Each structure stands twice: as structure tokens, then as C-alpha cells.
Image 1 (cartoon, one colour):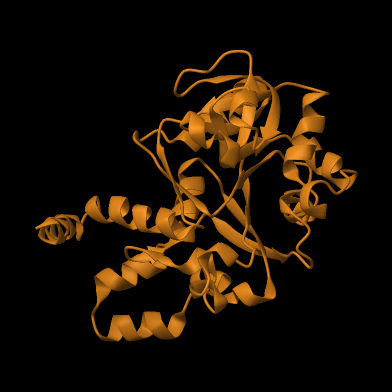
Image 2 (image 1 turned 45 degrees about the horizontal axis):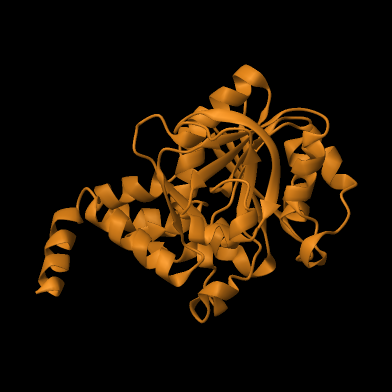
Length: 291
């Protein structure tokens, strides 16, 4: 059973400057809550009981957000603002813990995952990149389906989505014998990082959700620096493929790259129009802008 998820949040967010100069990019709000809350809720909905933030000294506001604020709670209670009080007290369920560990140097995604080794222990785990929001189209989320598939097969799961052919050179693209149906997994042959259009093995891009066996931590301990002179999670997964099956899971939902400004604006639009309280008014505002 997968109960632990690693969220690497130590990056400086250069794609989101100047906002990320003083605000962690993960704390930029999508409608009425920070982007990272959506990712944490996604993990919790898939059965995760412990969120491990791999963080940086400048990201204390993320840890503070998921901590209790007794002064604020007392103020809301005294003012009888019980709806708001309930909302801030229930950001995560009481049976879910959030812990953090520092990444002392920016040495890559693989290194960030390795920083959580002592907390993960000998357990299998998930990795969720908080730059990417996944808006599920069904109650049974894509991540939950990946966790179930891992439980059945013990094969690592890498979430992928189809991208237009002319964009494959912007992503890590998986090599598969046959393209999986939506909501299904197939064995991977490899991952090609940003291939030329005429050399891409498929149009299925890796999007930042992984369910991995515990042995990946041992592989990362000996993984040499790769692209960008950093320890890459992709290299560790490639090594894992030489030892056992790794599968690509084709997602059903929709992704939003909130690390980019346009991706963030797209997320605000989509989450805004479906917001239970603000959605109708927001849609009306959009119609007014189109006049």
C-alpha cells in the first residue's frame, strides 16, 4: 500500500518571476487557495497518509500554511465565522501528516527525492511535482488508479498524457510498444528527453506523477549526475527498467502547468468556472469580457 508521497518544493521558480522572488510559486493562489493545496488533496484522495515536503529555507510559508494557526482560529471563533474556521482547520484530514526535509543544494529532482529517504524508510512511495495540477474527470482519480495498478502488479507507474506531435520536443517522451488506452498502463521501453519530432518514439509525455518501489532510493544513491550536472530521477527510472518492469499510465484528467504563467492563467480559468461558490459569477464575468 502506498501511504507516503514526496512533493519536491525546493525550486526557486524562475519561470514565475517576478512573483516568485518573494512568494514560493507553490503558494500562488489558484482561485482561493494555493496551488500546492490542490496537489496535496490529490495525494490524500489517492490514499496517501503522509506528505513529505522536500523544501528550501525560503519556503517556510508552505510549511506554515499546513500548520495550525491558533491565533487566527481563535479570532474566527470569537467572530462566529464558523464556516471559515472549519475551512482552515480542515485543509488536510486529521489522519494525514505533513512533514518536511531540506534539500541543502539544488542538485536535481532525483536528489530532492533522495533527501526524503530516511522518512520514506523501506516503503514504496509516490512522487508528485507541485508545478503540475491534475484536474480529474472522474471521482476515481488518475493517481488513485496508478496506486491500485502498482498494488496489483508491483510495477512502477509513470503518469503520461498525449501531447500534439509538434510539441513532443518540449517534453520527456516515453517509448512504449503500443499506446495505452486512457486509464490503462503498458510496459515502457524507455524515456527520451525532448526528442526531435521525427525521432520521438510516441506522443506520450511524462507529466510529474510517479508511483515507485522502495528500491528506487537505493538506485538514486548511486545515480551519477546527468543532464544539467544534476541527479535525475529519469536516470534512476531508466536503471530500474533494466531490473524490472516500469509501466506508463495514460491519464484521463487534464493537466495545468502552474510553473508557467500561461499555464497558471489557464488553471485559474478552469478551476474558477467550476468553483462551487464563485463559478457562476466567474463565468458571467468572462462573458462580459468577451463583449
